[in-house]
Length: 174
Image 1 (tube, rainbow, N blue to C red):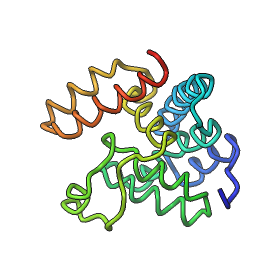
Image 2: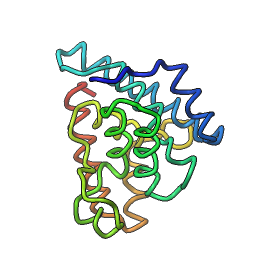
Image 3: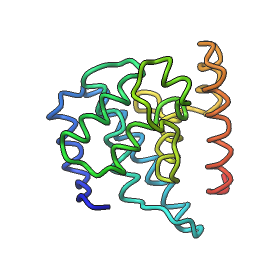
């Protein structure tokens, strides 16, 4: 990592500075708490995971919601991260957290720049997973998220979340 990771306090300040709503900030704090807990368990089980990166990436994952509440908040957030000089690893978490990931075809259909939008690293996967378990700022069963995606006819996203859930629960032994 060539750029310095902001502290927790600096990340929260950045959410305020970019005019994220208090509801978005509360959600980000809830996701960060769960993501950090998950990363710590994975680390204790011998997985190579940067717990601090997970927490900061989770705190900032929805920074793009300061500009839009559509799925495009991932793109807006990655752009904000670059403009603020955040490490690329943080920008990647922001860019890859939505829907358990976005395929190249879906990204093309959304008019997004050609890039990788599926979570690749364990840190990216943990944040994406934690985001699916926190609605507003309360934890919800993963089944609720999967059911909601299916009701919205987002079947591919539901399947990605199922796979992500399986992968993370296998790692942490849940």
